[in-house]
Length: 71
Image (tube, rainbow, N blue to C red; front, top):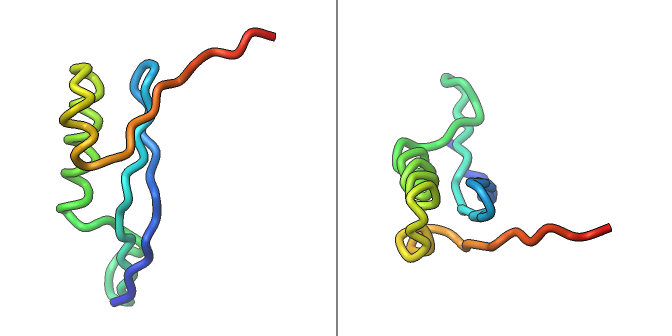
């Protein structure tokens, strides 16, 4: 099994979170795929952002605020 480190982005409203996950590549399985733990972590971060709980989201991700740019 081969593991590749990737960063997934999650956007909810005016916030974006960067979550580091491992993509797993196995010859017998559909590849690449996330581990169950990483999938749950992505869901937890997404739910925390929806609630506006930035502190909880920041436990598993780097959280950024989006600012519109006037043209």
